[in-house]
Image 1 (cartoon, protein in one colour):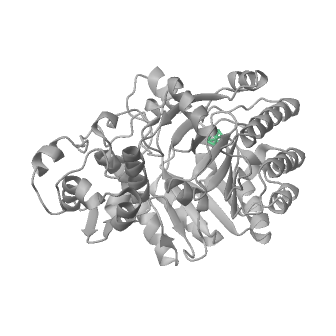
Image 2 (image 1 turned 90 degrees about the horizontal axis):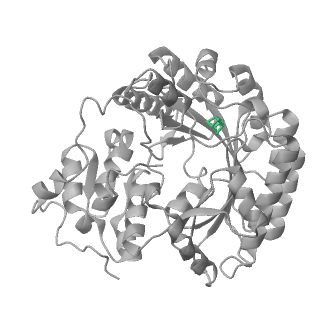
Image 3 (image 1 turned 180 degrees about the vertical axis):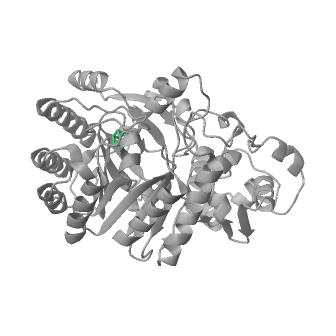
Length: 463
Ligand code: SF4
């Protein structure tokens, strides 16, 4: 089916280029290169600010229909508890809940899951991937994790699950808990290291220190998870050239299957932002964007020298033939994702949805036997085309023929002026059936992706 805004452009055809390029949100001022407040990371499309409570009915319509059997299903479970709130964290996290309160939360989320499992859209479906995110999933006790996973397996059988991903904070990982996590079927353990430097960890409000990383990582390695991932952040408060290089060297030494590197951003709602406000400052006390881009670029080069391959704007992996990230790839290709727990994001039958962001209203809704969905957005085929296209660009390469086959439109036609311009700027390399992102493009891909947004979605806040 042709999409909403067909064009007559073809890549290399500069007809209308000047006019279209003039409208692109690509101009960068000196001020933009400083790290100010706000989210820059593009995680979904259309932007979250377009998701509204009045669209929740669209989700109810989806739940009453039969699913497309070709669409894979994933489960996402959100655990909003942490030992301590990091100064750069913008999630709603709880650091003071008792074990009984956490049990109450798990019970509520399981009721949420069990009510979804009875709907026409989800009944009898077998998930392909499961993701435990947060917050800190590893904050839960072994008993809580065991109870949680057995309830999940009873509602949605795991015999076709290919990946169980689990986020962990090093200081919460005892040897016994790591063994339990492995025995419960986790295949991809992601350890939130962020930095190996104790001064930086302390200054940025992290709960763990380097000794806890060493101990937890050594045990995790000995347990042979299918995939161990380490998260790093480039540009935490007080990061220096030497610190950053040492962190990358240390990560290489540990030899994980995968490393994810984020560039530090300072969203609203963070402690750092509040301090900026109090001091009347517009610039955050962290490195500017060109420095962070250079640090990630240099890190990628160091990993490449050590035999790793760059597989997206944020990841390097040791062996791309073995190390896949099914959650990310399936989601970006339009899989269904059932979001469970407070503040969770998901996507069912073309409808984006997010749960209530606070535990109180979330639990109240469930007490009233209602779904705790706070806002939703029913995407149309054109928005899904753009969503897949921009998210896949974050992998560094897309095949236009994939989009022609799936959506009946070729991105080379649809985005010819944008592609021509971005190629001219050295951010893309465009061929007959390949749109490749150069390393410089990859380092600032989130900024470039706004060029492909529908004009009414540009400049929206990503919260
Ligand atoms: S561990 Fe993660 S979720 Fe928890 S406070 Fe820190 S950044 Fe936020």
